[in-house]
Amino acid sequence: MIDIGSFIKLQRTKQEMTLNELSEGIVSVSYLSKIENQKTQASPDIIQLLCNRLGIEIDNSSEDLIKEKCNKWYSMLFEVNNKDEIITTYEEIQEMLDKNLSNSLLMFEIHKIRYFLILGNYDGALKKINELNEIANTFDSLQQFYWFKFRGNYYSTASDFQQALQMYKLAEEKINRIDITEDEIADLQYTISVTHSKLRNTLESIDYANRSLEIFMKQYNFQRCAQCHIILGISYRRIKMHERAIKNYNLAKHLGELNKDKQIIQLTNLNLGYLYSVTGETKEAISFYEKVANDEDVNLEERLNAITSIIKEFYNIDKINEVKEAIVKAQNILDLAKDKGYSKLFSYIIHTFEYAINGENDRFVLFVKDKFIPFLKNHSDYANLVFYSTMLAKHFEEQYKYKDAVKYYKLANSAYDNLISL
Image 1 (cartoon, rainbow, N blue to C red):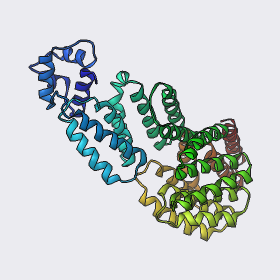
Image 2: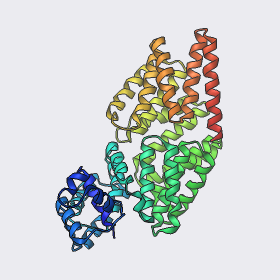
Image 3: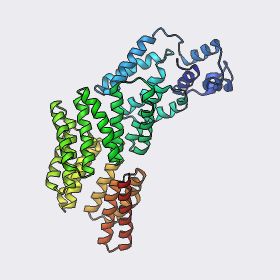
Image 4: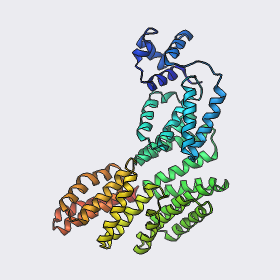
């Protein structure tokens, strides 16, 4: 059963009611604070008066129905198939929990973090994290598992992958103490693999991808198998095992075609583009990138990845007109994703090339030096830091500013050292 003090505190903060407003005429502010922080046990009469003021009924007549609806909703959040149904079910449960003290309340509140992230409401997710943080010490092991996992999801959307990994590892520590499905375990392992990949921890990424793949294969979950093969392809590309990378990409693409899953197919095309770019096959790289960038059904982040990669490819072979055309397309896609957490990175990339090709030297230098590079440092994005520090260093070299050029070549080398030591 949820502790009554935690319940009252949660409901009070949700209703933006102060301690004084809730306690007035019932108990002192200090005594209410003790109730909320589980430092005293109030009488049933006092609890009833506090709940009355909060508009809450203390009975469990609807407990089975609330539990059933919550479990259904949690499954929806895990699969993320129909957002309208997710919203409708959420509203039904919220209405019931606003009127009843239920064992399901804390787990429901924790899952709201995931709910807000799915809807793209990142401020709502952060507000819920801060709200729950005050009572997190009351969570049991299962609640802690989701608390850490969903906080990891939040940090991932904010591109703070180091912090995300810490959260996921804390969730992983709870697995042996709780009863969850193999699906849930494999999903966490896959998520940890992706996060290691973001941090360029290649061997760890391969390890966790293989762990999750083993479970998904047993369940014939082709979509999740394909996702694992993509991560393996990325990892093998990074350690220059290109044939093994292509094999995994082709497996992913085949599984995507079996499932008629356009997202998987185009994500594979995007990564094949990266591979051919690394091996210096520019024409092939661009052809794969274009398949993704021109597909309006594909996730906006992947389309932005593709179109900014096209910009880089054309820039590297001095096709300035093609760069300009790609920048226009990139800006149009970015306009659709302006509220997304990842949009800032792509905005910086687009502006960098825009200033570079238009000969706006002062704006280019100030923008990259004072805005873009600090942003990349702050996010420990060493791969992009290598590229754009080198780009800035080459610019200074062409302007005969050798001292500045040396400074940014050193920064690129330092970033590269950090990248390979991750």
